[in-house]
Length: 62
Image 1 (cartoon, rainbow, N blue to C red):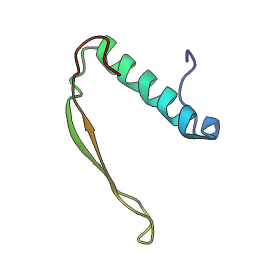
Image 2: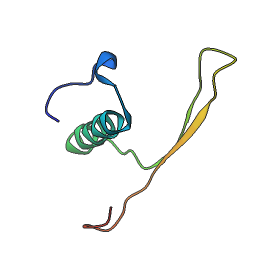
Image 3: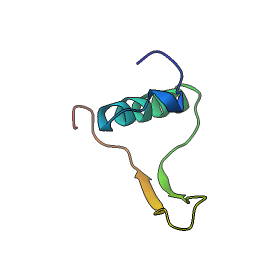
Image 4: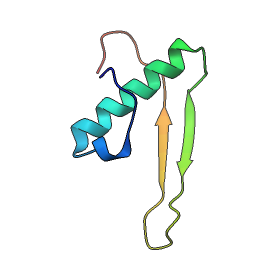
């Protein structure tokens, strides 16, 4: 993916993963440390909250 993220582009899990890979690559290219856990809180009480963890893996692992 070479275009910036736009919320309307998310149609399925593959799109989500592509956007996430792009976001991680941009952060890495800008020397922004990203490893760690992130709490993603919903603005709506009835919607679930999430925890996202980013950790480095060995090259070639998927």
